[in-house]
Image (cartoon, rainbow, N blue to C red; front, side, top):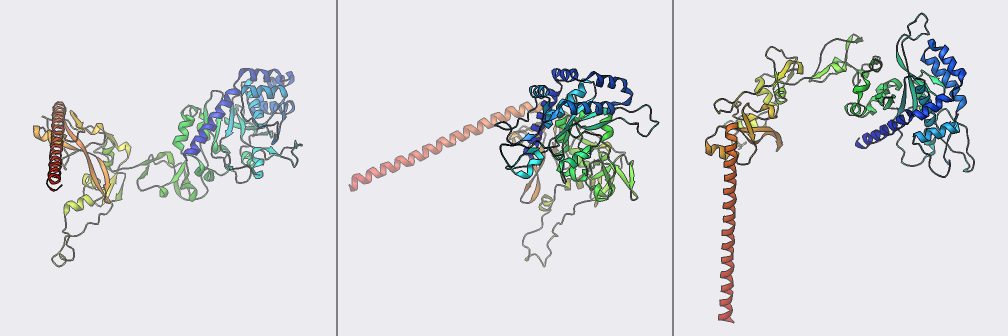
Amino acid sequence: MVQRQAHLVCLLAREVHVNRAINDVTVQCLLRSIVPAAVDVNLSTQAHQGVVYAVQTLMRWFRLAFRRRPYAANEGQGAIDFDVTSASLLRAFFHRQGHDHEMVALFTALCRSFNISTRYTVSLDIPYVSKRNASFDHWFGVDVSSSNDTVSQKLSDRTSMRSWCEVFSEASHNATTASKRTTSSWVHVDILRSIVNQPLEVGRVRGRGAVMPHIVSLDDQLRAVDVSRTYAVDWARTQPLRCNEVWWARQLRVGDSNANPIDVANDKLPLPTSVHGFRNHMQYCLEQHLGMYEWVRPRKPVGVFKGLPVFERCNVHTLQSAHRWLRQGRVVLEAEDPCKYVARRQQHLPPPPSQTSMYANPVPFSVATAVVAANKDNDDEEEEGGDKQLPLYGLWQTDKYISPPVVDGRIPKNEHGNVEVWSQAHLPQGSVHIRLPRAKVVAAQLGVDFAPAMVGWELRNGRNVPVFDGIVVCEDAAEMIEDAHAVLEQDIVEKAIAKHRKEIAKRWAIFVKKLLLRKRLRDEYG
């Protein structure tokens, strides 16, 4: 997954570089300069026909003025240069011919030179090919003949379909005929095949079974927007192949492009045609597919499918217990009722031993052991009570948690005699968290009120046990405890050094005694 994300980032960076080359003023001015006057006049006189008519007119002239160049396997003496730069576009302009990716870039620059809102659209996914295989040549557009000396100039319609462009068509003010466009939208334009407003043809050209999970459009302001849904023949089949949506949206900076109302309108998808299609759908969901801790708010259906209300997935929220919200620094409002109840996790505790089974089970029953053996969901039971149903609340039913203050140097504690420090906001007002190994001993010696700081849970021997780290004390006593702790640490170090020296002297004494004993034995017995 990480390798694929890195691959997508590299491909996206390359296409941004191509889009910058398309915005080159020199390229756009040269293209505009060779447009015949008749075409320019026709575009001016027929402006009422709309953008689509203008694009079709430019497309007919462009197909006559520029020749499409095939990808030849033995072109030149090296590999084909797929890097689109201003220099490569100028070279294609002066030769009046170019490869597929250069033709798309030139036509996009031509449309932008006429102040037509045009986006450069590209598919960022390529097949995973470990070595050269003739079956993949049609995808890359490689035209290989049986002889290395002759190259066939015939092109197939099933060549590489990686890039095309889109033009923005505004809503028509005169909608008296069915042919007039009544809504504004981005229109698909394929200069290589002279196709306009047929987005599903992209999948057909790519071949049967081809899936393009990531298709990106870049405008002249270098903003990127994901348009994969527009060109997906089967979105339910395409969606599982996409990367993490949050990560991908961050890479594209969708916030800038979402300001366009046309992009927002294009996000609306038709309802699935089966119940299974709602299960993992990105935009719609059924209530029966929601998880145990999920809830819909606001409960405004956007449609009905076989008598079942359909909700937007963006309105699905995660519910948590009151204690779970407290861990995140939020507290449930008193006037709020739970959204739903779920069954608590049952704890199977061993019963106390009877007189008849005392010898069969020599391990006595211990309430403390049973409590430690419970799961960490027990804190929810302690907070909400001992009912079998656990109430769940949503974020809109909570408010920011305000910790209680320290009064007269006394630390407010919970029913267990400690303070749960899930974050700095959970510390009582006027207190500090001291994370020193012997802070508890020092505070007890000084007579300062303190509370152990519980910072989490850990799994030990198959059981969830609390983790304590340091203590919570009043701010006024923090410096005194730290100084006393430093003195205690110094005293411990000095005692350890003295003990170590004493042990060294003791061992040297034993060693000297043994040397004297050996000398005496040698002197007496030779």
